[in-house]
Length: 238
Length: 289
Image 1 (cartoon, rainbow over the protein chains, first blue to last red):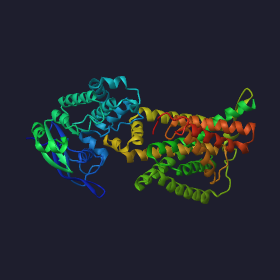
Image 2: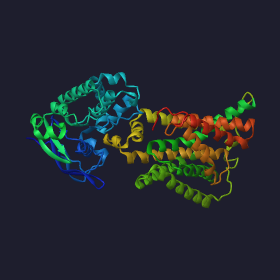
Image 3: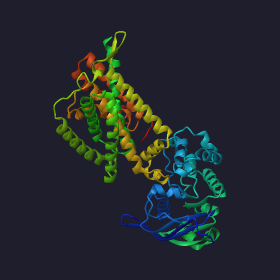
């Protein structure tokens, strides 16, 4: 198999004295959708934030497309084609929808084509073009999630990281979000979804990782994890 | 007629307050730094205009060729330093106050604590005025108002329309996420510090046109300029301009109708009242912050 697009090895992440991840290793290949599931506090968001450069790694190596991004300052990481939809969306509430989206194309290589990318994003989320001039903070939760995903797409990522995209949304909105994720993946973007909604995430992903207390407990094809005893016990509480 | 004249003159003088306040407000809104050293930069800008115009017999407005680049560098250097020190909002108040005291000390060592004023032969603007009917407007206040309007309009357009401006507003709202999209906070803060330093040079030049200089003047700006920043809404450039004009009009009218001595009392009572009604600032609509 070719070299993976994302390769995380021996990753330790700390918050001060508290260690949140131990020896985490995950891989994502070109075109794949991979999900990371696990109970609250397992370190799922920490993993996303370490890859996206929002929080630094303590030890280990994070490679994207063969390049080592472990020690890069946060703002350099997106140049390697990584974009993030952070937990809780974290859109810019006092900026318009359009300004949120255009900011997503801030990195140099995305900036030149930002008008064309914007048309693509509006095609995936037509609602955003109707709301373009509104302040992002005034939108509903589902619309804000669209802004967050659209903003990430504006960076023209090779790898899209989504942290709890279903959090706090009505079921019908969750459907829309997951439809969009599938369509984004069909366009050739590799996707990592971190979720507490395990059923939903396992349904969309090809492969999956189960995190528990900061370590990878289990990994394999999503279908296998869905039926596994560990997943049922640790996440579904069955 | 007196009152109309007072209103209009006050509005024009308000331009100077807005010019002094805009940079302070933007740095506070975007970088969460309350940079009191900004008053120091305005002071140095004023002295540079005085010195260059006096020594070289240069038109005071042309002294900007020297003072704008100099204050750009100084403003950028200060922001670079603040970034290295990883200042919090409150710490920035203390550190920049220290810096301001040092600047005032250095200026009084160079230019003494005595009042200094450009003589009439180098500064033709001090005595010029434009008459419209029975209303008279000193040219210096017209220059102040015009420059303030230009700076505010420019800042507004940059913040709304350019990638750098959007990035600054994004930093103000969520620095870490802005970083994940490639916004280099360190570089932008140094750039912003430089641009704000340049506006301090403009404000200093305008002040020197119509006033005698002494280092202690920097302290006199504090109250009014802070009032303008807070009333306008932190980080709101258009709001700052409106607040500057409002404060100018209010002081002008109170001085004309009552007496100049009561102006601060009425002004700050009005500001406290305004903030009780709208704590986020009278003109805050959701700008940089």
